Image (cartoon, rainbow, N blue to C red; front, top):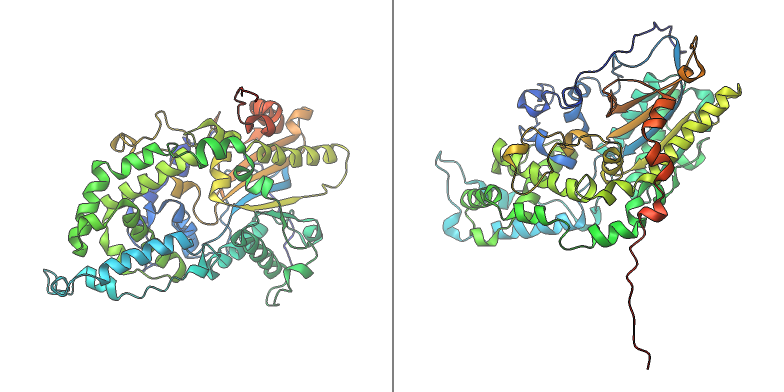
Amino acid sequence: MLRGPRRLLWASVRPAAALAAALLPSLVRCSILEPRDPVASVLSPYFGTKTRYEDVNPGLLSGPEAPWRDPELLEGACTPVQLVALIRHGTRYPTAKQIRKLRQLHGLLQARGPGDDGVGSAGSRDLGAALADWPLWYADWMDGQLVEKGRQDMRQLALRLASLFPSLFSPENYGRLQLITSSKHRCVDSGAAFLQGLWQHYHPGLPPPDVEDMECGPPKINDKLMRFFDHCEKFLAEVERNATALYHVEAFKTGPEMQNILQKVATTLKVPVNDLNADLIQVAFFTCSFDLAIKGIKSPWCDVFDIDDAKVLEYLNDLKQYWKRGYGYTINSRSSCTLFQDIFQHLDKAVEQKQRSQAVSSPVILQFGHAETLLPLLSLMGYFKDKEPLTAYNYKEQMHRKFRSGLIVPYASNLIFVLYHCKNAKTPEEEFRVQLLLNEKVLPLAHSQETVSLYEDLKNHYKDILQSCQTSEECELAKVNSTSDEL
């Protein structure tokens, strides 16, 4: 059973350090790879959206079920009354498209001539030969499905959040949990695994029942919220289906940084450079990440690249996320208005119920989606915006950029809104406050760098999005006037 709320001391709210310092820690250095994680690759900080959650929160390597309480979290006179969490699915298999590319690359290695299967300069067998013999265990059926490590990600996140916010995740509130999910199996399964983690918290040692038999019921599918991008015609026409929308991604693939890697890999693997392309190089890089995240092994694919290569390949991935999900086009973020407004509708209802001295009907709302769900929303809120856009031509200038997808939306990433009710408030406006957490760390407000906001102040800051951003209008395609001759 859960512990009762502990006695808390009032913590003064003080401005946080700069957002980049708070959220872009020493992860960029290979020193984050702790001894407890001997298989971790020095490339781990650069896997972008294929990054393991524990590489962003390395403290989890020693205690994945123990909550780490951010000292900036409110305590004392302020009690949490509602939590709204947007959670990316856990670790997954590669997609069928990625697996086909890997199979193509593996075939190139196996087709090398007999003279290419030699020994390296140190007398060891060359890397290309080792990779040709390395088991290719990925199969088309895997196609982005959640792996057991991903279920573990979710169960452990549930245990930590339940311990961090015991009054919200109390057994009495269990039946009032509200869960929604994307229709993708990896998200549905992530929601189910999260509930299994909560069961473990309430009933240690007892096997969980089927999710359908749990008191709160299974997560409900809602793609209009969790996959809003699929329902926005303007985004689909101007970005998703627009062959020129990712110009900078394609230009970087043929630029000097990627071409240098292409030539280097061709030499290392002893394959004709004309048989390689940027997509194959990228899938080789991601195979290192998949082997590490899924099986916990450091495969020979990791030996193909060094840290400088990894930084370039990370930038290639970030370019895609920037132009397709981030600040590249306004519609990327504006398409998420419905989700943003839905979050505040939950918060509004909780405030109204508390003001009427009623119990909050939904103390915990859990929403399971994708990196593509989180990134547009964070961009809409003004987070991780660099002074200059990311382009194919300013890689060196963007070495210290804020927009690094691996630090923002690794597997199991989460954006959490916590609503507090504060006693002894001098004014009604001071009664309700909000904090945001990204990946279980307090996220300073984008506009003020403060670690907490009065709820009304936060609503006022985002007034345009809450009142004027109508998805039906934002996502409507401009009508083209046309005339036709009648016969």
